[in-house]
Image 1: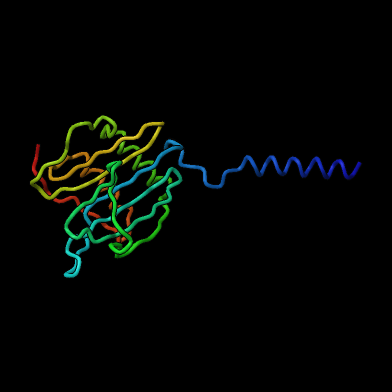
Image 2: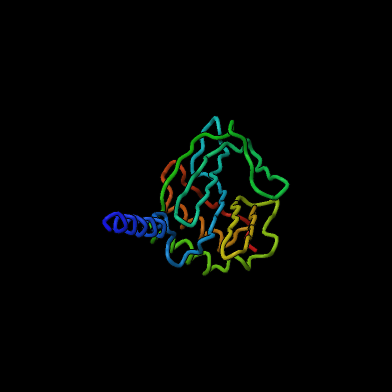
Length: 178
């Protein structure tokens, strides 16, 4: 009888542990949320005057970043994603966004109607730059913004910058206004 009780308790413990998810994402943020973000770095140096910061954030608020030397060009792969080599990376790191930061980020994405930004936001003039890919609620959307200043992108860049450590700080320079 005692063995049966222990087996039953062990079984209940296994069910309890299996049901616990220590990395549960923020309420209100889609469980499939993924943000890939690339923008100008607020840091420059004589050796690397043109730097960008590449950031990835998942639904749990885990963020990774690379600050890299663009060598004066932003490179895209065949799937239209920003790429760079390991030799271009100047600094990298990880951070964890709080629930309130994740909520603010998701609310901002919804408020600017990110998934409805469907125009071509690229111009050969202007200094503004932000590349954003977001997956959420089974959808994937990319906005590649070069040269054309968009209030929506500026909003996200400024919010993101408030979360980032100094060595990953980003800027959204003035561009040509639509």
